[in-house]
Image (cartoon, rainbow over all chains, first blue to last red; front, side, top):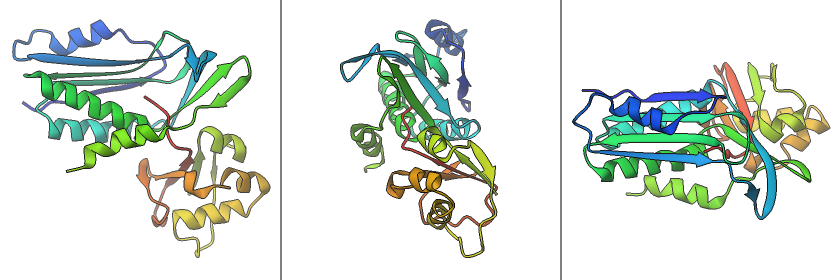
Length: 155
Length: 83
């Protein structure tokens, strides 16, 4: 059975438990579900922040995430895949991103979720801007995120 | 062709998108950055460190030497910070 990824780019929050339930409902073949939730921290580099605002590139965000979802589906034996990425203003403690992978065994589910998050960080066209007492500023990309994504292309 | 800008590139340029008609000798993404930079100080500031700038043609990431002929939409943006 071919698996189609569910991909949503949305301003609204999501419910992690509900997204997992949708993926596993009425199925007895799934043996492992891994979910990763990215959550807005209340501080950045030790400085408190009021909120993040995520800008995205509509159209390309969907296309880029779909490309990586297809790659994950071809590399691991997944039975279900959901990726949700929010945009707009997000307060500390709120959800930013969700990846849910389902597989017969845990290793594929873990690896595919990690692969997808590493690629979302460096390749999905989203940009975070932080609000703090000092005003607003764009968050800079981190070298270790590039390194994390690069390891998936090594033999 | 339509050109879009995101995050601080958008802020520095001052517009989110525009339609441009570069001359025929502007062949690659890098050429386009050079041509845009020559238009005004705002563009020059946005593209002052071209190595930092990422580009996409028709919703797919491309390298600076990518040929732009036939492109409907080209986007310029800083390294991504989603996830």
